[in-house]
Length: 409
Ligand code: ADP
Ligand code: MG
Image 1 (cartoon, rainbow, N blue to C red):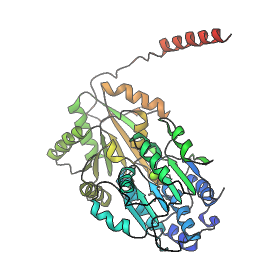
Image 2 (image 1 turned 30 degrees about the vertical axis):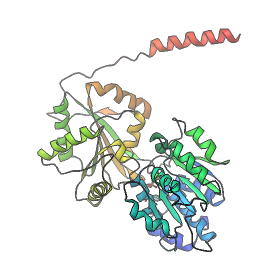
Image 3 (image 1 turned 90 degrees about the vertical axis):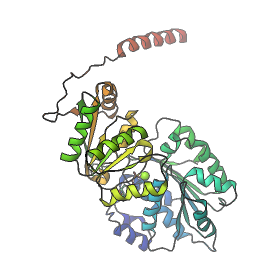
Image 4 (image 1 turned 180 degrees about the vertical axis):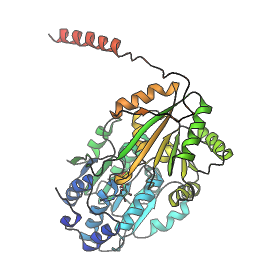
């Protein structure tokens, strides 16, 4: 296994760009995926959020284009699909930075942008196109994007794309790109929601990579929760945390309505924040994100849909103002903090009815998430205990297995 980028026999200009980005050594997923991708293999890789999956495909893709330069102008040769436009922009940005000393052209095609502004992109020669599936499909259908020149198809955040219902569109795009040589699929998880069946059709004898982040990369996220007696108590806890403890914080709420409500409440408390939600005009989303990224505000309110796949640097705190709908989403949320080896804090605010979900999160993450208290703001109600109905279920199962066993015999 390689330990340095220098061992990879990369183009010196690419190595220089990598160094300039401050990547001193490859992360686990990079060390495993890059050599295989350069070896012309299909890739099926899973690695936790924030462990450098983008460069895992961008570096070999650039090297490939340098190894096999195009002979004449023409359409894109590498297509990267991502679930959201923010992610597409971030992937493109990182790819451009890595391709800084090459002449390669990187473009994005996403929804939320006027059709006109894509015209130029579509007319010019591109090397790498980063796209969201829906809009790209529209251009293919209207014969404005040509997939026949695609040599590599990369699926980034495949689990999210499936979650968002892009499965059929990705299948169609894959068929459109049938002349490709390689397919690379990256995902935070490969479990659940049919990722397996999905990947079987897309990939050809892929190298399977399941990168456990090394200790150095592993996130140091400290997690705890506060119990709240009521919605008012919860808001008071949040205001306290935001003003006393948190530095750069993402606050998660479950719906747009909840976001609007909280925005007003923080506004009346004169706590400045910016916010993103699904179905928001592109320029306003960009604005909100860049205000947060540049530090002119330190609090970003977000719904889960809006926050998918966004890499926001230096987030110190993730606050679950509303608990997520599943433990899996919890992990995605807290993955926004402690990026690339930094430390982070994840705080959940839990009303009585949230307790079962909080318990589920603890079981799922196999971590002891402790309750903490803020002096003067302690909850007055007792922590509710929800009896697990496990016992009954277990008995049921036993009976079932017995029956099955009996039948078999
Ligand atoms: P993922 O797609 O796995 O969630 P990203 O590709 O977005 O992760 O990378 C997360 C962060 O880590 C980015 O800010 C990126 O610049 C940084 N990063 C990537 N590779 C390295 C590396 N080898 N060394 C240090 N930082 C890295
Ligand atoms: Mg990523």
